[in-house]
Length: 278
Picture 1 (spheres, rainbow, N blue to C red):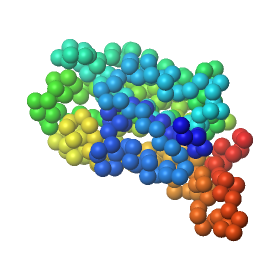
Picture 2 (picture 1 turned 120 degrees about the horizontal axis):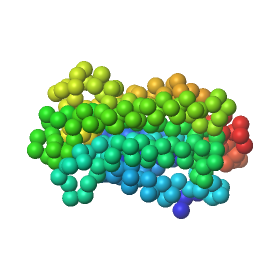
Picture 3 (picture 1 turned 30 degrees about the vertical axis):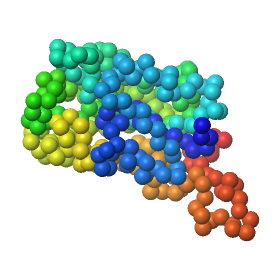
């Protein structure tokens, strides 16, 4: 196993998080922005809903008594709902549907365990933790054709799940304190995608490859919204890849190493938000 010398990002979600074959995917953008600063851990699982993901929480996040043996997690993205919002009576061999009330309860489980001072998980006690809660994107039913998506999903129902995410985002963001160890921001992919497309109809086809999953333009929309959070809600919290003051390279640049007496490890750096606590 690789030694945990870099802090980590956990991308937690379904296929919209996991897929990497799309140019400019979520994974690709995070890996590019945070090379040599943060390790990107993709924990996206195609077809999963919050009910199944909840069972995996112990497997993905280490307990606090083992914190010294795992990377410090400084960013967690939570992006579920595209499968939870499948119609209850959809013709599926394995039903993905999760009732709205349970969906909310599962998201609260994730958020409470990431933020509570009594959480048993190490991630909740890391200085500089940032959480991004993401809504399901809109649907473009007209390009779904005869695929199962067209019979399983209805925009008005998916929007109900979007509204749960937005409400929880406001609620938990309000709980963060100035001197606390965590911050939370929300990306409203439903609204942002519709605005980028300029409408809720055929215009969305550019952003949704099959009416549900994102294209490169769809991921670009997510990245633009995430960048806004980095510059505002998460400002000064060691996530700004454009600022070496906020997010220095973990290992020193090659041209700052004394070739006659190299001390690479002595040049290792962490962002101020982390070093202030060490």
